[in-house]
Amino acid sequence: MKLLVFSDVHGRIDRARDVILRHRDADAVLFLGDGLRDVEELSFPQANLTPISVKGNCDLFFSGSDAPIERMLRFGSLRVLMMHGYTPYDVKYGEDAAIAYAARRRADILLFGHTHERLERYLPEGSDLGGGILSDHPIWVMNPGSLGHPADGVPSYGLVMIERDRVLLSHGQI
Image (cartoon, rainbow, N blue to C red; front, side, top):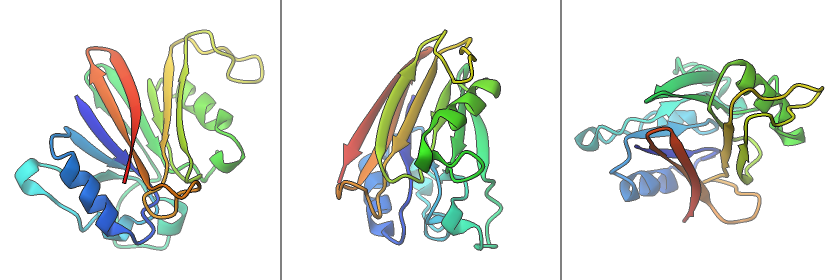
């Protein structure tokens, strides 16, 4: 299974369209917020690729969408938690609170945006989640970076490959 993940489009819908067309073999397209108005207009019915979205902080006043601020999805036996990451976990100051929350929700994969910085992280079972709390299952963590205003100047997106219960996280660039 192939999941295409992107975030923080900030008006660069051309880049989002390009990424979706490059990966039209994706099983799902996941958008992590900030540019929701544009992204919800994207649809590729011939490939059954309508983005599944959550709201980012810049989307809060876009009342034309019913996208939630977080979403739990299941792909096979794996639970994927999508969020933008601005509240209440404010990942700009570190992702630990969001990871601890994902662990409490029993997520296997945490996807978030907001920082505009790429991140791939694997926490094996028994990892310290802070405050003396140890994870009781492995967690994969990804931030795809930003298609609109990347922190390092290189527009990026994420790919999550799932085969049986094995997970591979990677990034692509435009």
